[in-house]
Amino acid sequence: MSTKAAIAVIGTGWWATQAHIPSLVKNPRVDVVLVDKNPAALKTAADNFGIDRCYTSLGEALQHNPNLKGAIVAVPHRAHYEAGKEVLANGLHLLMEKPMTVYAKEAKELVEIADAKGLQILMGYPYPYLETLREARKRVYDGLLGDIEYVTCSMTSMTIEFLRGRPEAYQPVMGYPVTGPGKNTYSDPKISGGGQGHLQITHSVSMMFHLAPGLRAQTVCAFMSNLDCKVDVCDAFAVRMANGAVATVGSTGNIGKGDGGIVEVHLHGSKGRLLVDAISGLFHMRLHNGTEEHLAPTNPPYPGEVPSQQFVEIILDGGRNFLPGKTVGLYTVEVLDAAYRSAAQEGMPVKVSSLYSA
Image (cartoon, rainbow, N blue to C red):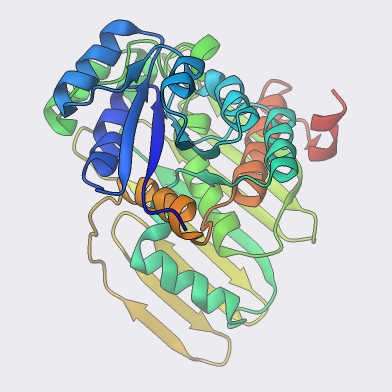
């Protein structure tokens, strides 16, 4: 395996400067390359981190850095597909920020390109790296819950000011070490796709697919409320899986400043149930035979820098892809794509198969 590689960060806004770039610059095995079509944002990030490999296009970055091995895409949601496609077309491994894409057809195409080229797509979801989530997944994969029959996913988060286009309102809470989100990044559907669904539900649904093998959505019904925003703030989905299991997915972004909210997945199987909350670290399992396991909340720190670290290990060490785009990424987009279509039709059922024929 190689001992060092150049990795590009495409998009130098809030999350790139909050998580990905700080993670990479601390790694002596990485040469960090920055790419952003916005020269002002590019210069701000470069100056803050002391990076001199800065370019306004991936093509320019490749021309000057032939040792590029991978790229992290951290651009607004609707730009994910084109940026990810360019990364893969140039033979680079891809770490894609969530959600993978806005539409299922786009996500499927990226998966097919990666497979054809022998490349990895790692999703940038951080919660599954928490020890509590790892323990929960082990219990499920060991078969302790049996066949998964019913799942509830519930997420409440402090996002409404993002969705209103007022990210500066969260500066006292979040800090924004370099820059905050743009005014329209999450509030304008032409840029964000949707609201709470694409920004937050993507986390809880991806956790469900990561924890429970064999689940993939077949049909989705959804209702959404925008409150005073142009995008959804409160969401409720009902999902039938291809294996017959059913799930409910709910979320709101309207909680108070400083409220950490919840990111819960509750799995019910033929042999027992398991509840895990990524925010508090709560873990509770009770099997039908009376066996019970409970881990008290530990309030673990947010593992925002871990996906970038994992990406380096995949590229340089052939490490395991913990959250592949082929399953967790694609399956999550299928739920979201179907949900937005259903909500636009007052909750009418939308079959996932129809996402690929429209």
